[in-house]
Amino acid sequence: MRHLTQLQTVIQFLFHIIDWRIPFFALHAIFKIDGRKSQHFIAKYWRPRWKWLSRRLFAVRPCSRQLKYIGPADSFFVKNHLYRSINFTGATYAFENYLDEKGELKRIGRDYFTVINE
View 1 (cartoon, helix red, strand yellow):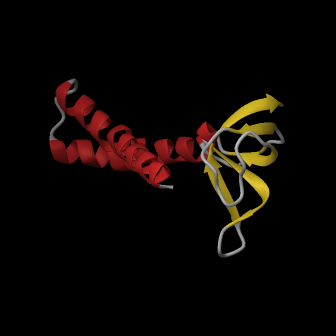
View 2 (view 1 turned 90 degrees about the vertical axis):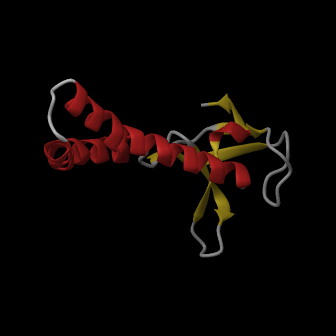
């Protein structure tokens, strides 16, 4: 689980760069727009479109694949056993009966699996 936390931190950092830093730099360096006007433009025009795109990009989609677990031993998963996913976000899978403490579907990264059958 520590690996996923570090991965989430890196993803949040990348989103911050794409969300604020690159547009701010482009507006300031290329178009010579000062900082306050750049921030206003980013907040009004760029961020709403980017948030819509990121929500669509990582939306939960139904996905029934047969997957082979190649990660370390877990309380639910056994190495080299086959499992069938029920949905996919582009980065994580969910499995039937793989639940968290609240009884909600728990997600696991796709790096722990290889696709056997789509």
